Image (cartoon, rainbow, N blue to C red; front, top):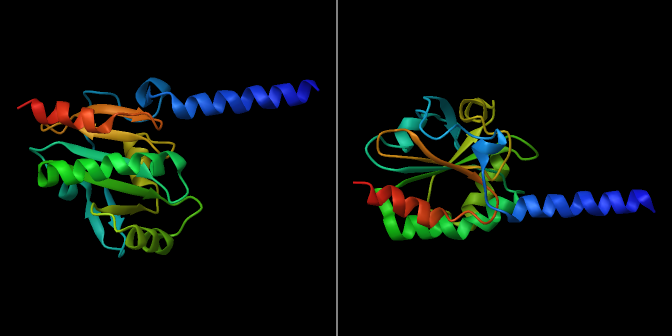
Length: 172
């Protein structure tokens, strides 16, 4: 009986962690606000090497999501990313970085094509981005300001990404 109660408590805590918006950097995930976006190279879904600064362009805000096909947080955040791309187009760089855990680059490419995502997806097959961004989990979102500094780091399904992007766009 005691084991079942403990399992129930752990399940409830895990659910709360998913539902409550949280600053990821406060949890030791993601880079701290104010730090420069590091330079790193990873691959696109065709296997070509890409510098992150080719897609998160200096001079305009950027959004980076650490992503996986199986990530429930990522799935929940997708409508907000779509809204950002639709509302702000080229004014904001949006990039998803797929991790190499329980998925292949080919599976990610098939998923992205089927979902018709309109923002770039990269493949972090060697963990370069995860290490550079201190992102040890999926569903972490980092936002970069026009000066190339981390302006936001969060995790969970209740992040208000649209509002955070609008704050960045308002800082002109």
